[in-house]
Image 1: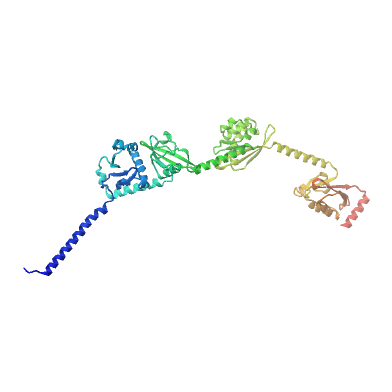
Image 2 (image 1 turned 90 degrees about the vertical axis):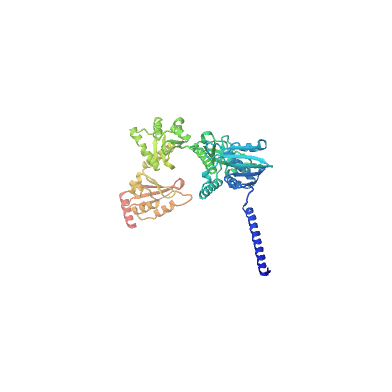
Length: 533
């Protein structure tokens, strides 16, 4: 047998390559399990297992981590979050886990009557570590056989619900029948952190921020809330909430709706109403406000003083017709000839007041005079105001009587008189003036004549003279003035003595007297007047 070097070299190379491939394959087999292993627990289907060193999480299965809220999956917050989860499903689990060193091993199950798929809780301490396991009490073949798409949809929906609860802008929590908080969202936890003192930390069970709701408010159909105030210890700020609770089995859900802005608005409205009420109380005008249904909702003390109506009647919120009936019994409305027809006119009064057009003066049998005004208010309300104007009417009547008396006095004077105000406006003239000059200034000059207008009239009615220019200057003269007089002639030769005198307040009085002359003098005066013309 001959030695073939080429064949020997080929065998050597083939052996080396085969050994190298084998080594690489073994290295790959040893590296693959190390990459795939992410936990000290072996994946056990739907079993959730936790390993704690005291209250610090050492490890947990992926299923166990998915049971916790996203805010409690890391750090020291895992322990209270897990106790919250367990207390909700296994009542009393927190207290028994706290005594686990005494009990040794803890085994609990959920209520099988109310849960078609009950859970089993097992807790024990081994080597100083606490091992907590949550598993199905009865293996569900249907759940294990669920397709991956369905399981993914369930996980996505669960994550969305957790995010909605965590991001809700209002505190939401779940209470046990004893009032303990067994679950809370992030907003409640933030509020609880603000409510704690500077050196206090959140502990389990969570602190109770609000007083428990009455049993009647925890019904599923409950809709009425209970208002509560929460004073934050860290800032001293007062927060207001409207609590609404709904029962579900042995627990109840509670929602705290923030109503700070509503409370501020109510306080502002209450202060405004108090100011308005005090203002109304000091008014001398009686005020009665009727709502959209025409029921009396607001009145002031002056209304009782003016109408004489008893407060017991007004407090009973009488209707608008009943209000007028009560006033009629007190003789506080004008007595009509036919009261039934007048009462039917209340509808017209109501419509006129609703349009802001109702205003009447009532002359009462007692001699008093009231001004009644109706005005519309928002939302269909109606306001009636009653004002006693008896003094004002008496003064008006007295003023009119004085004017009539003064007019009668100057009408009895033989001389023609015209009185002008400081601004040159005619304020009074007598009958002798109208007879002398042949016109009534109040009628011919539109009810208001000025001294300039009358001077023009006098110029056309008399012979040419500079007298009337002087009269215009005299009426507008400031300072002290003295009486003076000058004659004027009618075209027929009659002579008039014109006298102008100052009065108080810058007024001016013009007095005209027609002089009696003999026929010869009158004929000469006529000739003279014609020559001047």
